[in-house]
Amino acid sequence: MCAEHFLKFVTSAEAKVELLPWGPHEWFSRPDLTGAKQIQVVRVTMPPGKAHAFHRHPCMEEVLYYISGKAEQWVGREKRIVRAGETAFVPINEVHGTYNIFNDPLVFLAILSPAEFDGPALIDVSMDEPWRSIRSG
Image 1 (tube, rainbow, N blue to C red):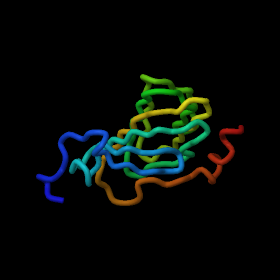
Image 2 (cartoon, rainbow, N blue to C red):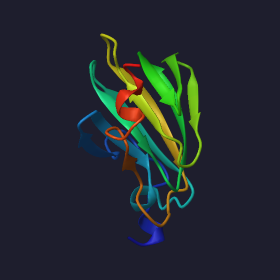
Image 3 (cartoon, helix red, strand yellow):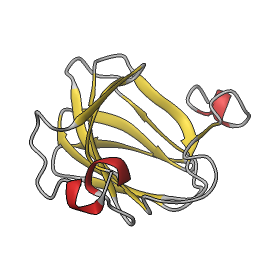
Image 4 (tube, helix red, strand yellow):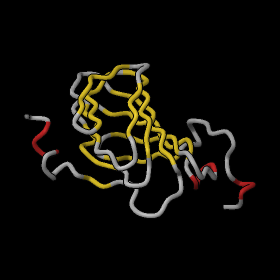
């Protein structure tokens, strides 16, 4: 895609949608959509009882901005109940997880940087200790 074909404005209809086990992801900015090199933006709708279990991003930092609902959010070994209007910051390679243990859908933005990098975007550590046991401990 040539630079002149990248979107400068992205409507909900133009967002790239991925259906993942923890809920649909609507991408509003990523390299193949906007040509962004430094930032990605995705809106996630997480149904009740779903989770993006413990994982890390080896090359990206992330800001989570909660739009509606609430979640049990982990950043490292620290847990908080987060609500609409709040944020969580996840440093590069920090283990984190988002759990919707509540009765309403959770909607949040994940803002990740950079958008272009070498290596995997995500490494699941949910079956590794201590993360496998930490929520029950």
